[in-house]
Figure 1 (cartoon, rainbow, N blue to C red):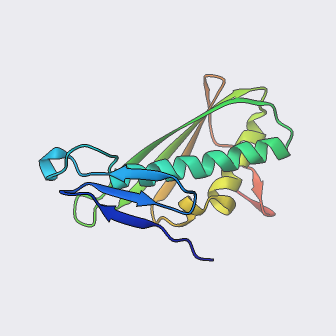
Figure 2 (spheres, rainbow, N blue to C red):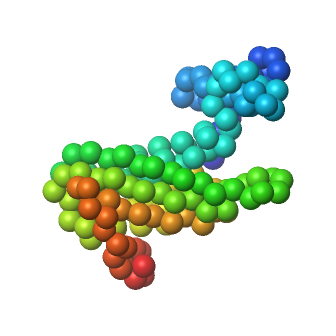
Amino acid sequence: MEMKVVGKWLGQRHFQADGPSGNTIYMDAKKEDGGTGQGNRPMELLLMGVVGCTGIDIAMIMEKMRVPLQGLEIEAAGERREEYPQAFTRIHLTYHMTGEVPPAKAWRAIRLSEQKYCSAIGSLKAEVIPHLVLNGQEVPPLDVVVDGQPD
C-alpha cells in the first residue's frame, strides 16, 4: 500500500505539502535557522500525526465498546536526541478522557491503539509512554489483555 505526498519549496525554508486527502499544510524552520515562521516545524507535525492517529483509534475503539466518551484531549511530549539526527527517543502521551469511562476499558483502548492500530506510532523507533487522566484524576496503568497477551 503506497501513499504519496508532494512537497513544494516556497523560498528560504518554507515548504508546502499536499497529500491524497486534498489538504495542504505548510512547514518552515524557526527564524534562527533561516526560516520565516510561516508553518509548523516538521517534528511538530510528526507529533501531531501521532496524536491524531491514536486519537482516531481511541474514538473508534470506545464507540465499538459502546463506552460514552464525552471528551478526549491528547498531549504529546517528545524527547529528542541531542545529536543529529535529532530523532524522538521517547514520547509521553497523556490521554485526558471525560465521560462514564471504566478505567480498564480506557487502558484497553490505549493499548490497542499503541500496540496494534496506530500506524504513526508503529512507524517510530521512539519509546511511547502512555498516561491516563480520567475525569481529572490520573489513573495508573492497568494490566489489560491485548491480542490474548497480558500487557
